[in-house]
Image 1 (tube, rainbow, N blue to C red):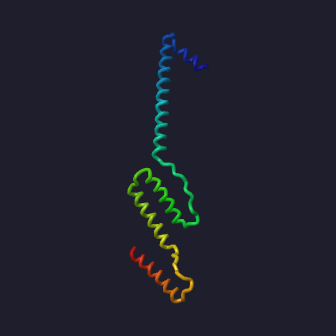
Image 2: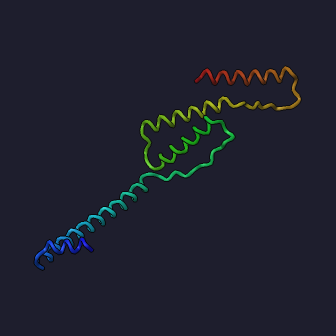
Image 3: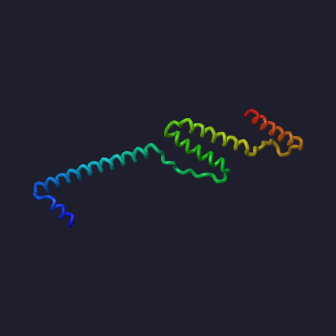
Length: 144
């Protein structure tokens, strides 16, 4: 209240007070317009951001898999989501290649099943089947 009384003392006549009030009203109007424009800009930028950055849904991770496989699969999943939105850049493409190689290497390390046509094989036939499977795997590794 004292501030208002002090302000009123500064103006000797009514026209001066009215001019001051008009100036204050003009300032308030300009600041209100500026505030609304900034609010609109914030809303617009939020909308752009939501449209440009995909919301990544969490995919359940198979904890039974080893860490390398889980990481590679998760990263490939995220890169796949990005590729649905836009074309991947060079670095992202290299990461896809690296993670794919990791998964292929892990796949090659997994134990192979040997198909045997009959359960009643002699020891020598079983030994031949094992050596043949080993030779097949060695030939595949030499090609890489």
